[in-house]
Length: 255
Ligand SMILES: [Zn+2]
Image (cartoon, protein in one colour):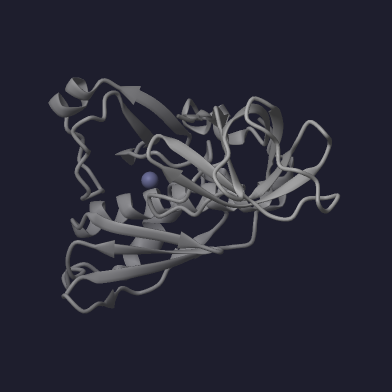
């Protein structure tokens, strides 16, 4: 079993380096007792980076996947070449590719914000989201209503970027979450075993259960704009968005 250390709170999403113990070695990979590497899931791609073994050899982490209760880190060729993989029980030092991770955090918070605005203005929930590179797609539960000009989405979105809004991670007991159902922009039901519910709040607009990594302020999103909805086979609409390059300050973002 791997502790998902990036889930704990907002500062955990900004941890770029950590130590952990190897608990299993499936072929070409290691399982750690805890990890800050995000495994692919929920529309968000996995983190990449490196693991340094006790001998000093550095292994690129080329894929991170959830496998039951564990997280598998698949390793590439080490430097120096031929160095043996870390053994079960040994401590490794993980380092996350921050440029990639921070882009994923910006994308995921941007998706929540856009989903919330689409729900607010068009009354449509998001049934699927996917993010890659600097862009993402939001599949709505139906067609965008013809009575609502889609051009109103961008200006409404920008009111949450300037002035920036705080983004928070809160743990809410399941019973409390069920008894105060906030208007929900997500259409995916919570699995029955989830308790407490990890809720991502964007101040003043959205509360959404989520296991992803997020930025702590919409100031880190930069400007972004959705394109017109595209009708998909099945009759629902897809909204595509793309972030600007990383805001100038993102390299200075520190835990
Ligand atoms: Zn999410």
